[in-house]
Image 1 (cartoon, one colour):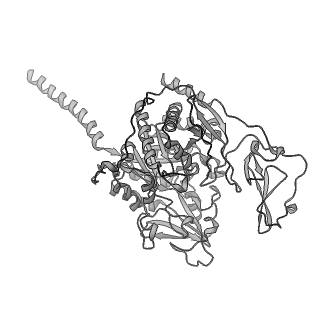
Image 2 (cartoon, rainbow, N blue to C red):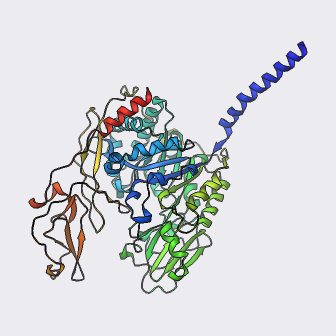
Image 3 (cartoon, helix red, strand yellow):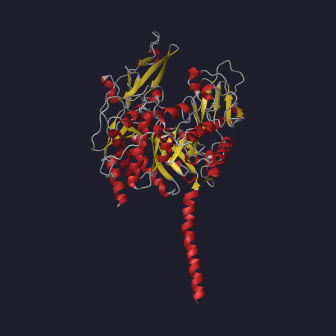
Length: 586
């Protein structure tokens, strides 16, 4: 009997030790791959089959889903809700994080920044400790209110003078990330911090303390796309995997393989680097003299890119589902080719040229990710996949990522880097007396209108909402120019008033004096003179044509008295959300 008891005790001890050792080993050496799916909230405005909502997200194939974007309010350095119509009034934030009940496998994150936000106000925010504290406090409140699991930094780009940045950004941005990390750690909720980054060498040198940032962040999302475009002056694919024979000068190392290797060379471990792939193509209008298009062919740069697609409606840009529906129909006359070295497809027809990704090219990239030991794959953006199955299976590109990454275990890094000398390391910021556990008090939301953008047809300024608390913040009199990489119109409920009576016909407009813009008597319309002929354009509801700045601005900003209306305000969204969040914690 004693022998049997001894045997049972030994068996029990082995089982217990196994139960302890296996999770420990898994935590130490088993890192699952990341499949990061960015979701652009303005996809809801695309027409017909292009319309994409939160319900279309294939959450079962993503480990991290990122809602894009919120911004920075440079009047008080708090969170800026860029589209209150979708994000607040239609419960975009709340509906997004409510998907946790359906997709428990995924983390639901929020991204701040993006190309349209510019860089100037981000540079101003990180430059002053009090401003950093103000924004971080606001972010923590926001994360609690809407139950996000992580925060993605998408400032494009620190230190970039061409984007409103300054020389001091490199150090100050690192301080901001350190302070944000400490604030998140104090909350004890397991919130992740990730960052979308460029892969051009001069961008890294300008704005990123690579080793220190990688230590503080959970993952680095490499934007290994848009490496070519209309701005380059020649036709090409925009996410080549390797250097090609025609790549010279600034483009010699600007490819996926060499770009990500830069981050490794600068001291970031490969198991923190997530590789970005585009679910869209970059388009070009070829020069009239180009007869046999190929990679590097001359383009008509003044055209601003290829013709807009029927759903994304942006020059120089087509979603994958806009490309595949054209290419697969032989009657439409597109010629498809393959970049044998860059391992990407391209296609052309008449003067139109498109470089993009497809199922085959993504399979090459997924194999390369595993060979290199990188942390996984990321896509911009999930809403541009063939999510309706117009060309075959639904979400065909996302499925490539999922099929290759679902069973891939990220290996421990085998590369070693030389430690940076102390004189070359940025000094860490010290914990200040203000950095104490943050209380989740009530917040409020008000609407403010940003500086209007230059307006073309189908494009307006965006209504924005500012998240504020009672904490005073520094003032800033400088304004930021808002740029959009693609149209993201926001419907505004207040219509622009117009004077009574009949309006003019296009035939009544005089374009003989060489002018560009001509105002209409109808506040919501204007004309542009093209080759001496008037072309009529319409402003979006809630905006009126401004005859001085030549943009569709909010009606309360109109320069003509008959076009003005009262400001509409969005109130108490964050207060309600905060109350919901507090109830959820109790």
